[in-house]
Amino acid sequence: MSKNVSFDFRHINTFDDFYHQFVQQFSLPDWFGYNLDALWDMVSAGIELPVTITFSHMTSEQRIQFSDIIDVMNDAQDMWEEEFIFALDITKSSN
Image (tube, rainbow, N blue to C red; front, top):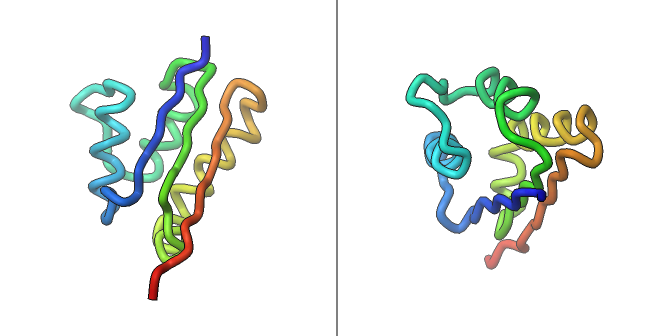
């Protein structure tokens, strides 16, 4: 059965916020590094598949700010195909 994991970007403002939630959501060990290389290691070989990861309530500004993390998720989806599904929900900014 596929695991569904959602990251609510109304509560994620920094990279540390994201990585902290990632560690919690996947029950990762203390030695996990809060960086893109460690993230790639986990999504490419360290987490249980199948999984669906959703980034919700993401503003267009956050889409730019977190673009490298989004790229890692897209790369994992390309690599694992049906086993790793990544969904992105962009919310319009209220200016």
